[in-house]
Image (tube, rainbow, N blue to C red):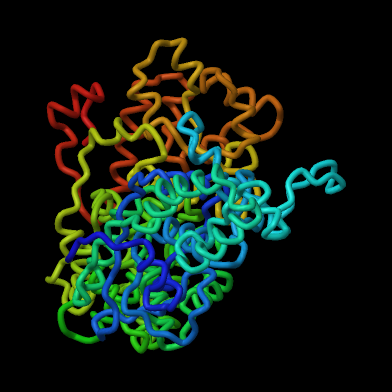
Length: 591
């Protein structure tokens, strides 16, 4: 890596002739009119505008599709450098101070406009005037009008008009010959008036020459810089804007072989990844899964870290993308079987990646349809959820789980690490207070999987009911009632006291004691008491506790049933049910 100052004229020439270009993953130019004027003011004041970062280009280590900066006339030129950071500043400088065409910009409200920029000679030399007020933005017609275009406020449509108003066109300031010609005509227009000549000499010495000699620091990355370092560097320097993703880099790489990755992904997303669950999968998630699948199928070292994804080849992508898409669809079906219907109820979006890869591998010969194999997949999944294994950096776990589960399917003695390490502490039930945690969402899915029924209609909360009846999670002993009774919030607001209920049923419940709202439901003739009791049991709710408004017994008994359900899902017993910590927290044993 090298750092040196480059003269602004040299930078603009390299942009103009195409030796300096942009990697195709760079976003379009977006600076507005006021920001361009402020940038020009800084340069004419000889203030620093920040360093730019370039990447040496032309080797086989990094092959990105490239494009010229907006306005550059260069065509079919291979660049020697790519701009990684500084696109907005360099494009603004090139467009306003070098290119003869009007600048494509926008107003502060986002309206597209075209502008030429001038500097007022008199104001620029007045130390009492803020320099930005000396920078004038003119429409491409070179006319400033009012009264809906009827009145002309400023006319710069001819050179003579520029001379008259003492407004110097900034798009020639970096061209000595054009500046000299403009100066000669300017002097002639003003009859070589001594005051005008002196004013011009001051303007040239204080504004034009400093701009012409202005330098910008450039950090140059060596051409052998690996792709993952380029990605990391860009993320570090671009924190104020739209961050560069792995997908953007791979898109630029594949574009060199005339493959439009973005278009391919959009087509897949529209066709397959548009449902409530799969819509959460991003393009980068898909590439990570594809890399995981590809490295597994090669039979060597399995890995899917950022550097591995960046080294995914177009051939590998095309080989596995279709199968992987079907694998994600199969994974969605498994999650729906487990009563996870929407992305907001998905415990971990990250666990979707290894699940989809496993489904892809096992779809060969329809192994994923085999009950014993699918049960192992589900057991592994729930161990990940209730062991809360997927909450941080996951690439290593993806690999361990895909390799481990595949080995486990072949040999029952080779239990994968996630299944081995999964552990659920009984007291965790009390700290599950909101749907943000994976284990909380997992418990709600298990209740739904238990064929739980609506308290009033008795309809099982399957996928269609879940969608149609606006199912949400509500308190069994209502919040208002619990607060009036001064019950421990850690208990009444925990997952133990919550269950999926339809919107209409929750309105009937209100904020009264369970015995009251259950009687209310019965008296309205909506359901008999014995049938209502069976509905309650499908939610793992103890009927006697609720009928007697016995909150403490309700908490103890439901906690036991939830722990039983977790044990069944994970295939692992939960220890410590009668420990001192559990007794102190719950007021009784949970064994």
